[in-house]
Amino acid sequence: MRHLSAIHDPQLDLARYLQLEMHTRGDTLKTLCETLQIGPEPLKQVLAGQLPLTAVWIFRLAQHWEISAGLLWHWQQDILASKPFFTPAQASD
Image (cartoon, rainbow, N blue to C red; front, side, top):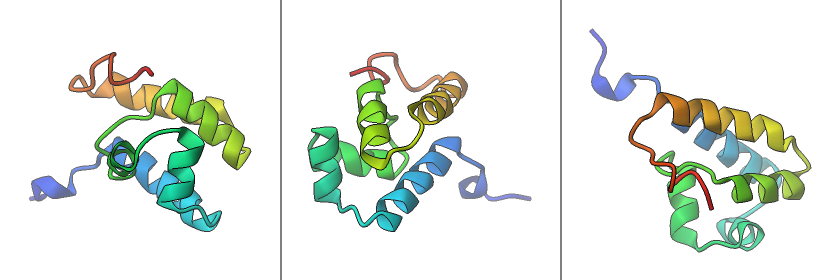
């Protein structure tokens, strides 16, 4: 029998990917806050899988890291579609 904490969470997968990109590229919490133009608390929540990325944040990350905004957008939208506790207001900037 699986323990509840072992249940797969797609938002955590995205958060882990963002953490990996951040560390691989040498970004810090401060540099990403500047890039996303947000404070440290929302970014910490995103990196912990507790807050979804907004469209604006996705666009800024894609430009900063030179990665596909579409990939991040579709990944986040798939997660939002599967999690009713995220409201539309949380998913937009």
